[in-house]
Length: 139
Image (tube, rainbow, N blue to C red; front, side, top):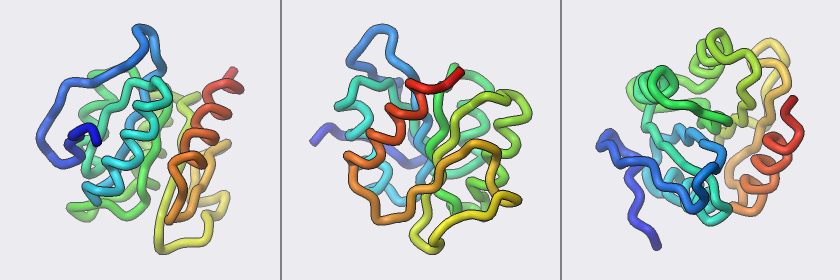
């Protein structure tokens, strides 16, 4: 297993392909974050991680990100719903995938347009398939 920090410590982004799309994984549970990041790394994506919305917003303001994958309920009383709405103000076409273990889905009023919800627990293959599909069909 590749060591991958999903906590506040910053690691440089890692990519298997020189021009890979960049995925920002926002997850406060370290083990879950590591599993998601490894699945995306194995697929050849460049992966950045954040443990809360504040860290994610700092990354979004300083890095090019092609897709946001975020848990809804995050550490330090931040949440992925508000994060995605703020991200879309700056990046209106940013694909967003939400996840949560405490919900079955999201209403249209809660989520940003054209986003995807994936309930926990999810399989790594599901995350990769959804990511590939969204990035392949972005306009």
